Image (cartoon, rainbow, N blue to C red; front, side, top):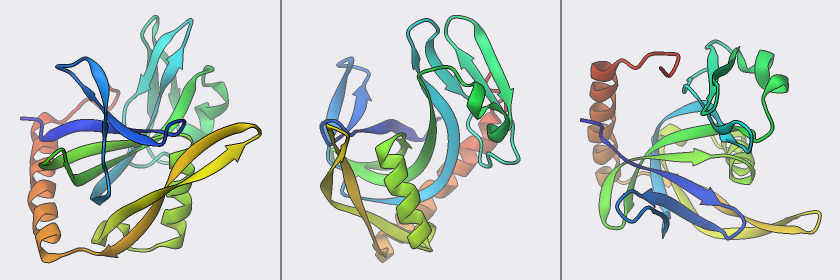
Length: 193
């Protein structure tokens, strides 16, 4: 059984983390103030008015693994290493980083995918460059900061890092095993098919 509870996204225009509630059929705002990173992957995601939804397989290394980009209307669009295909991606396609995290959302502890695109991804990349040990620590989000791009106002989280408590470390070990066991059992097709 898939141990991943939900995918979380950050809406920079309003400064909110959200997840899609399948029962309510809507995005629900949540509070995300800390998490432990289990693993990261990269993929292409987005939307184009002519092509529809855009997605790709997830890869752990954009330099070594092939990305297969698909869209709703025509299926497979392009494939190759990210460096080879990035200039040929259709309008609306975005590079995303997925953090598989252990977090407590609405009182439920579990594995969530925190998908980062745009401004939050830029903040995460800068934070990761400056801080070693993101996989051995608890990442915190104390507040948001306001930024501007031209006349457009948006928000980004302010990431921090602290030593994980014993309870957080134990939970991360348990959820990491569940994630690895599920991935071994499911052995997804590397082309997202």
